[in-house]
Amino acid sequence: HCSLPGHSHRGRCRPRPHLGSLTGAVGCERYNFTTGILPEGVAGYVLRPNGSFEVYLPGNCSFRVDSVRVRYSSRVASSIRPASIANIEGAKVLLAWVGVTEVDRNDDQFWFSAGPVPKLFPVDTFAHSPQCS
Image (cartoon, rainbow, N blue to C red; front, side, top):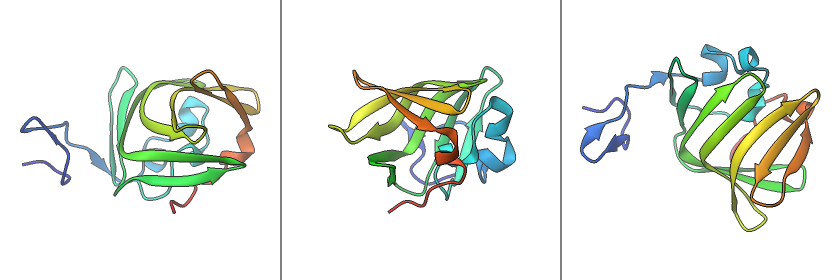
């Protein structure tokens, strides 16, 4: 029996997610990221000792960051280490809905790698979790 509906893969359950926010329970700040890097409403997460993680949202989520539209799938998987989130699955930005592959922090800037067009955002842009629309 899977702990969250829709979180089975090929008839097997994925690792049992922790309920609640990855940002609150684990603290993205521990990795030098602000809480707003993830949207409000995280239903659960799995964080492994090697830094790989999965975040579960109640459904697909989209919101604006400055002039850019961001979309998260109901499952986002990646790996995190201080100042870098890499190998991202389930996150896109609207230029042509290009997949976000990595987010790095450099001082007061987040550098989003999304295909051939990287985008810089001030860290303060992500001070609070955005609301999905």
